[in-house]
Length: 267
Image (cartoon, rainbow, N blue to C red):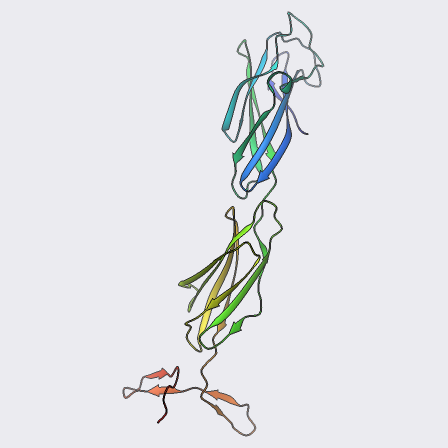
């Protein structure tokens, strides 16, 4: 049980103070389950006071799940001094329990307490309650890639230690420019994925972006590029110089050229 601190909800004489307690805070994906209790007393640091009339509170979490008129203190008798006494909601109206949907990156939920008695005295307090935080996969890396003339194999991996966010999908965007244009995706819970690209052009640079996404929408990505192998038909050998590859080019009457991607027949 975590005590969240006393707050004054009525500043006249005698004062009235309340304090929230979160007995249960549990997260599953983007759903947070909670159980709260509320205590109330008169006076700051247990100051003077009597307060005959019953005390009630209305409770909500993130402006949802409103629960009204929950009794904390019943009628305590004419001019009976209640200085130094703490009054607990669960003894008269039970605990405030429920669940609420939160954003993927949420770190708190808001508990709102509206205090009132039967004579029209009112006040309010709010608490920002910490919740377990989900995190995106991290340490994305590209493993050893297998690049050929018209195909490539890209392997990506990540780390994911979050208890509240699980990997569900990998994607690879790729193309001849950083705007990509083509996409592959793999539905998997694995922290590693291998993409097989086919139908590529020879001797061409390709850009890619690997992205991993979790079940609550958190994602991380890594970018890179590779060059497909060129088609080689010969090698240029010059004494005293490195051997270089020679590729075939067709020259048209108008002077334009086109790389030869393959030779099917030689006559």
